[in-house]
Each structure stands twice: as C-alpha cells, then as structure tokens.
Length: 345
Image (cartoon, rainbow, N blue to C red; front, side, top):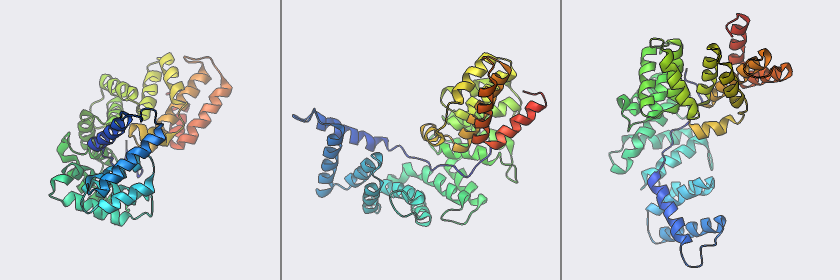
C-alpha cells in the first residue's frame, strides 16, 4: 500500500469531554418534568446549561460548547467558541486548527492551522500533552500535502517519525500506519522492510488499515517472507473489522484457492458498497484504498458471474459489475483484466 494524498487528519476522541456532555444530557432528562423532552428540546437545554456556565466564568465550558456544536454539525457556531477559547484551552486550539485546515465552518487558512499545530507540539503545558502526537502527525500531513507550508517529504517524514515515537502504543497510530505507506512508495523512500516494521507496529496498536496492508505483504512476500497463513489471518481479521481493501484481497485469496462460494459471497457483499466517504469515516481507512477494495470485489464478482463460480452464471450482470469495477478504480480493473487474459484468474 503506497501513500496517497488523501490521508485524513488525526482525530482526537475527547472522550472525557464527550462523557461530560452526555452526563449533562442525562441529568437534564432526569429532572422533574423533563423526561418527555424530544431530542431537539434536550439539545437546547444542554446548550443553555453550557451557555450559563460560560456566563458564570467556567472557561472549560467554552470548549465543551464548541464540541457540542461540532458534534451536532453546527460548524460555524463550533468555530466561534473554539476561536474564543483557543488562547487558554489547547483542545480548542487543536479543534480550531482542524477546522481552519479544512475550511470547516468558515474561511480556510492552512497556514494558520499549521501555526496552531506547531504551538501545541512545542508546548510544555500538561494540557497539551495528549494533543502532541496528533498535532505532530497533522503537521507532517501538511508538509506532505504542501498545504500551509512548502511541500517537503523530508519534513513530513521527520514529523511522522516524531509522532510515531518508535511504535509507542500511546503515540500516533495514524503516523505509524502512514510510515508503513510512506516506505512503500516507488521512489527514493522505498524501503519495504521499514514498511513492514511500521505496519506491524501499527497493527499491534490496533490499526485497521495496517492490518489489511500486512495481509497483502504476507500474501505476496512484500518486505517479508511470503506466508499464506499469516496473510489469511490478517486479511480475515481486517475484513471482519470492516477494512474494504482487505475484503477485496480476501476475495482474491479465496478465488485463487478455488474457494469459489466464499469468494462469490464476499465479493457480492463488497460489490454493493458505494459510499466511499462514509466508509472512510466509519473505518478510518483511506478513501483511495476503499475504492480499490470495491473495485476488486466488483471484478471478482463479475468473474464469478461470468464463469458460474460459486454463483449462477449471468453474463449481463457480469458486464455490469465489470463496469462498476472500472468506475471505482480503472487501474485496479485494468490490472485484473490483464492477469485474467493471461489465465491467472
């Protein structure tokens, strides 16, 4: 898996703050006369409580209200409260940097976003400690994409290595996965042993993307000795967890082993996917590789339909899924078509 430009920002869960918001909502519902509130009315009550806390001088409530608005997709309002509290709340500064970078809730300003990220990364404050690794990752992303700073693979690599922190499970797992992809690129940075190392570290720390990548590396002996058993385990587990690229490769694995019913069943499921952005949001996997996985699923399902492997033969449906494979990723479709012509599939 090579690194593409569509890498997303690293999100911080802010579990504690979200728990506080949930507690406020629950406590409000339990008040006399409030049990029958609609969801909209309940949200209005939570909003009024947070506004009252801000009025009473609770600085923490600024971030909580901004987060509340952000969760409700009221991005303009969220940005206002993150902006108002950025100078005394690093969490607000982090969220504001993300919104500035993407132009969410207002004008886009990647340069200012990177400036805020560097303030967080360089801060010695305890309040910024849990934000340092995500900030370092996002700075590396900015250098890689060339947004807000001059494009530099060298600087991107430097920041990602800092964010990955030698595979520390408390560091940026996104950085560890990204390094695995960075070292897989077909250029001067190509180092498949390092790619395997970083995908292994990230997988051990829970990365769904890297688990699928490891499966492919084991399957084809990329950066590691070929190992069919480990390939299957990684691809199957990643597929079960929702990695669409792993699903596509697992279909290929089944088909090569002539497990046609399994191949057709999984391919049929993958071929029904269409909303790449939603899948990326749900799984944290790169949109470009989700599209590749769907393309593979569609192609193999078409092949099963054409040959009657694991499913009733249907030439018309086969043509439809070949076409869908091409729509999702022309390069994947062309590669599979080429090996089909050579009798591999």
